[in-house]
Image (cartoon, rainbow, N blue to C red):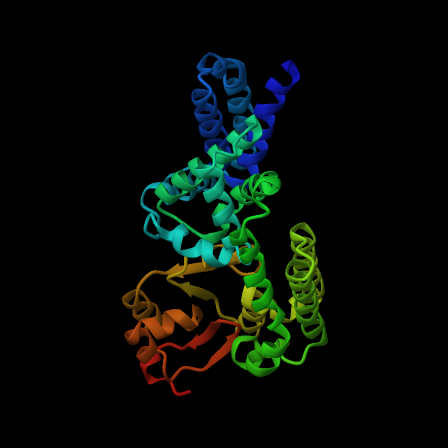
Length: 373
């Protein structure tokens, strides 16, 4: 017990170190609500007392001091205020309404979403919560969902910390609900759909899969693994009524698919990262002897981590026009931004460009409006 009291703040610090403010808000709020629900508020000081909070502050202080030593005041201010407070209150990026996660969970929890929803419905309705672990996990899930929905900046991956709790909670009551026809349907339906993955690949693959992966044998084998695992799951559930075996077969199929597909991940690096973009930008900057700028992108402001040249930001078209009147430079901009801003699209329409994934590197010459492609 005494050891756990000291391990808790260390674990919370590690959570903050990897997941930011969620790492401290999620456990503290969940612990308090859990103890209140058990009418044991007197124990809050045992887990979140002065010693524990003091240790957390000390560890955070050491981390922030290291951040300051490496990146200076600007980096520390950006980390603490812009990236944390800014994203929480009035985000400059990924701003979505409070119901965003209710919209996205249908595919982020796939293919288990129906299984999870039906299981939690039974847990609440039938009051299957019998252990403190189950009670705690249900509180973690609900409180985290509410808190993350209140935060201004939202992305699907921000909800990742709650996934293990959802899975464990639902599996922990399987013995109570496995005979339900609704639970069986939540496995049969996705398994039936995923069994068709391989034929769907050959029919619709060219329309939904990146060109680099069309005909790739790793991808074909990975999708075949998914279809086979799903087909076995169907047989296990429909013919033999083995719910646990069906879940295992579907899980193995998904795991095998991810494993095999990962061998071809490098082919789409240009779509999921900045390494290829930075490499091409460096190459052009060296050849042309010019600097480069990124247009209206918070993330690309950190592109200089991958490059050998400094990257400056341009926040509006007027700024771009003024700069083009003085010097030659390379402009990095996303395809989406070009399509969204018609003035930018028109202004750069006659400029020479290089495509790298979802980005364009545009050569902007002095007096840009006189450029030809």
